[in-house]
Amino acid sequence: MSAIIVVDDLVKSFKEIKAVDHISFSVNKGEIFGFLGPNGAGKSTTIKMLTTLLVPDRGKILMNGFDPLTEPDKVRQTFGIVFQDPSIDEELTAWENMELHGVLYHIPKKVRRRRIEQLLKIVELWDRRNDPAKRFSSGMKRRLEISRGLLHHPAILFLDEPTLGLDPQTRNLIWGHIKQLNQTERVTVFFTTHYMEEAERVAGRIAIIDHGRIIALGAPGELKAATNASSLEDAFINFTGRNIRAEEVSNLDQLRRRVRLFRR
Amino acid sequence: MKTIYILWIRQLKRYYRSKPRIIGSLGQPVLFLVALGFGFGPIYQKAGGGDYIQFLAPGIICMSILFTSVFSGIEIIWDRQFGFLKETLVAPVSRFHIMIGRTLGGASVATLQGVIVFSISLLAGFKPYLIALPLALFIMVLIAVIFTALGTAIASLMEDMHGFQLIMNFLIMPLFFLSGALFPLDGLPRAIEIASRANPLSYGVDGLRFALINVCHFSLAFDLTFMLLAALIFLGLGSYLFSRIQI
Image 1 (tube, rainbow over the protein chains, first blue to last red):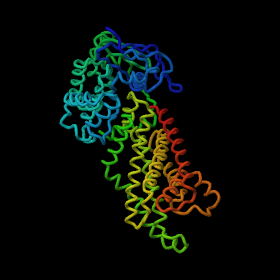
Image 2 (spheres, one colour):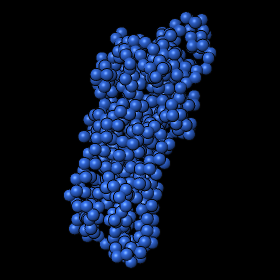
Image 3 (tube, rainbow over the protein chains, first blue to last red):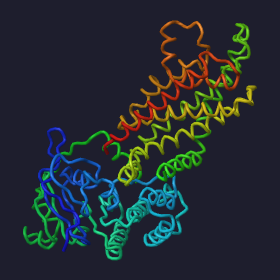
Image 4 (cartoon, rainbow over the protein chains, first blue to last red):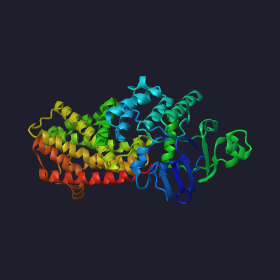
């Protein structure tokens, strides 16, 4: 199997804190890859570096063969992302959000129209396409974001806690869509979550990151076997310990958190 | 080009859809026009200045453009909090195009607002010369571009809305009060004169007055030159700071 994401000896520090501390791993084409870790372990920092939003201190990244440092636009064209926080324009309709994305990713008009229709039908939002996104429930917004992330036929789809704060029904529905799209679109899925049972169910392989280092990597079954755990949650706790992590929170993060709470 | 266009259209749609915002932002200029216009009118007349509404209306139009455009620029903070900014920053388009699209969008909205206030001022008794209307519109666009770009530059440095009051009271209000929008710039104390000469809005107000009522403190050529320069500088500064935003 060929690797679509290659990370080699990646390092990123903020002032004194080593957020990402010499990590290396690779993700295979077409797999669903879980990236797990406690709060503040370095997940988001890693994703930001993979998606061109942050520049690493050292190390090498290859995304579908492109280096984010030297060819950021090629890398950007190659992935889709659903951020932890909503990133749709709520004043615009579902259709307009998709349309805007399509233009930003240089998709020709005809293809764009067809593709938007196809994706909105898959995530069951086609009938609501002309409603402003602010009238959507959080599950619907998430579905819209997932379909938007796939609009430009990315090779890789990043999902940063795609089911955070959603009820079990919606979470099931969303993972159903993701698995379906992984099959039909042959898109590689790279996700993070704090719901271990979800990760166990959907991920082909899982990496566990803690204190900026990857401490375990393998299929859910392998991780459980390595720690003699009956569930992935137990395995996760065996790997990372029981301590609650103190997370450095910036102003911006605090605000985002408030916005998130407020939206629920 | 298409990036610029789609982000421009987005600003217009957002403006058009938020009716409360349109009405809300018209309240202040109307109040100023009516309260100051009719309140100071008699004194201004007695002092030999002529019809105060004639003098005031171009200033109030500039004020509404100033406020709307700085707000539009600062909307970036909003987009940052509500996440939309990230969507544009991970897209395979240059940040310069994103910034230009947003700025043109914000500037269009501000110009529109200026045109609305202009129409309202006609109702309040403002009687402009209509020959130079295209010139007036051009000056309004210039003012809008300058201050949207300034708003963008400021917003790129701010993480959240906490500093907003600061900007309102220490930047926007002084820009407005020291622009000659409310009073003539003749015979001012030295310090205030210097401040108003360094203020790009002064030249906007002056240029607009020239276009609409044929009264000019500086000269049209000077007004236009100064504003074009300011527009270039602020656009440059805005796009530089915007390109450095980290999420």
